[in-house]
Image (cartoon, rainbow, N blue to C red; front, side, top):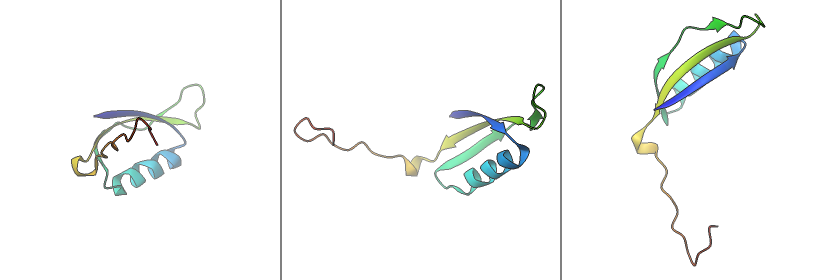
Length: 69
């Protein structure tokens, strides 16, 4: 599970959530309510819990002759 703390404007946060939902590599488990930042009210904060899709995990490339390229 991946836990992401996101800060930004409400518009930016909604844009990010929408794009992550469209991405097939991730599955969003939970999104908290958007809360305003007390010190700077134009910015907001949200916490997202997400998980990578198992079929999209990347494999490690084999090491040849000790080189990592």
